[in-house]
Amino acid sequence: MKKTVFIPLLLAASMAVQAADVNVKVRTTLKQTVTGFGGACCDGAMCPFGNDTQPVKLLYGPQSKIGLNIMRMEISPNFIGDIVVPEWGNWDSPYDWKGSLPSAKIVKERGGIVFGTPWSPPGEYKTNGTAQGGNSDDQGNQRGQLREDCYEKFFPWLNTFLKYMKDNGVEVDAVSVQNEPDWWVSYSGCLYTPEQQLKLVRDYAHMLDRETYPGVRLISAEPLGFSPSYSDALLNNTKARNQVDIIAGHLYGHPPLDNGNMKDAAVLAAKYNKEVWMTEHSVTDNIDRLPNWHEQLLFAEELNECMLAGCTGYIYWYMRAHWAFVGTGESKYNPGNTKNKLLPRAYVMSHFSKYVTGSTRLQTGCSITQKTNASFETSAYIKGDSIIVMAIDTTATAKEMELSLPYYVNSGTRIISTSNTSLCKEETVTIEEPTNKLILDIPARSLNTFIFMIDNAATAISDLSQKEEDGPKTYYDLRGHQLQTPKGLCIEKLADGSSRKVVF
Image 1 (cartoon, rainbow, N blue to C red):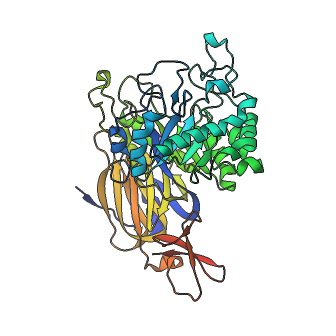
Image 2 (image 1 turned 90 degrees about the vertical axis):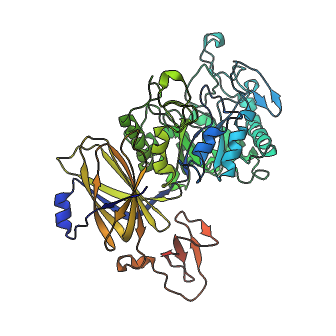
Image 3 (image 1 turned 135 degrees about the horizontal axis):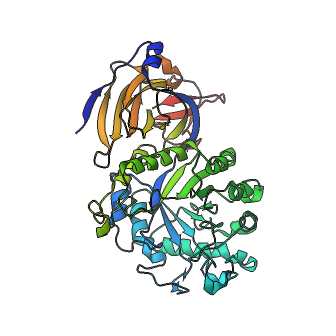
């Protein structure tokens, strides 16, 4: 049931500044457009779900409560075409391309994106002759790398994966070069230096069969801590830059903003109009209990900080784990860990996946009074004719937030989560007349998603008018993609070459 709340509007800006603990100003400067959010199709030791499609049914598509739209799967090294090569290890689930097929089909049917990541190419292509990374006693500490005489085999091997998936009903949207090329492991892995990855992509990525699979995109290797050295090497080389579509990485040991790796990598990516995907991380995955609410808010902050760092796609690690989105049923983590039931972290993710996907981030400024703890985060987005504002407070003190918007709005909704048992409650924001300045209450330890509707008739947003002009017009979304049928907030290009924002 929706709850209606009255949020007073202060007419004098000076009064608002005095009253508010936090002052947030949303500007018209456009940042990245967000492709979406997702998780990996596995729940332990890289094992896919097989015929158990309940996790993706709960998590994916607009008909779900969570709204994920990107699924990561492993391109396992011991499966080539229809031949299973048992190079090492015994797995409880089918450790091959078949294991992710049922889930991938559901995701694609619901309009989602499926991409594959190799943990290792086939062992016969490598210096140590096995899919293992090489960091183990029986390998004599021999580093497993792709042999240079097998560089020409790598992308044809990826083509066999694309063919297998397509022949079985799934058109894969993207493939990656390598999972964690900078992490020497005893399990499946392969090491590349930035220079080796550059050579592989620059000289051989043209062998990725984009004619047969025209929609497939190439993702860079995904370093452990999102080291910019990997993506920068590709983007600073014209030939390699023309082959790679998405730069990617993980957040282990390097938060998106504090240590700057993701933020730094995104600078060059934005310059060359490349997407930035965070393709693996988990928060509080080593705990022997279900995460508490503070830990859930830390996850929300990570999502928010990735957006502030320029991320266009965020993909969590396991979908099913007691610290993830769907319960495992393991008794030691009960109560609350029922198998194939949504966990609180999934609802936290939904604040972003259901509302931020497809939006374009807007630049924001945030100032906090001295009496207020600085553990407060915000971000803002525009999507169609709505403005979305995130507000995350991890402290024990409620706050008032003065919000200044670039356009007048006439209605709003808040989605609010305040505990593991009070998640995604919907409230109506009562706005008495069109305004671009609001005072909003922010409860202690809360995650808030505000969705405001732009008032198209307000004079303060005359740049969004639809005045008729002579001559042909073309329309683009906020990322610059041409639209056949304009809808919502668009960019209109006039016959004289000028452009403006319009709303349909």
